[in-house]
Length: 113
Length: 111
Image (cartoon, each protein chain N blue to C red):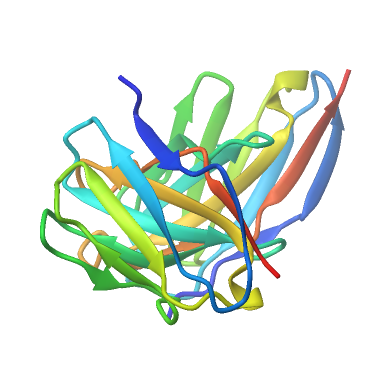
């Protein structure tokens, strides 16, 4: 099956700095890559996603890049704010075999004011 | 809209006891999922459903059963709880094969 690895496991940045979280996947058939934010005591919430036919997607301060050849994708958060502090999960999925939804192990982001 | 709700929020079971977790969604989504979340392991898919009356196994189905008798509800059952099933359980739903909406979770402890 798919193997999704996520790094780093913890990340601490100063408010206003950028944060980058990276994920790699193993199954070349994966074609959908969402990112979720999980705040303490809550369920994960989708913040951005990208499909394999696109190399980059941006939504205000967050962006995701995908390198299909290297099988890795990254989450970029610019101008970080204390409310960005949370655990972030990447995932890889095959939309034609949609039950195969594999999550990374998570990155705990701490934004220091 | 309430979105995805889960009942109960917390539960403590003794080994061998049984229980049912209830997930309800009011978004008219076809697809529903049950995940478990363990420290350092992300989320793992237990079972899923592609519509009313259907269920299928995910990555870690052993020890669990599910039912989807109504489109809006997805039940997860533990027939004989084991300490290895101590975890946080999340339900999710989606309209299509992406953008899953998650519930707030159920924290289960099996002693």
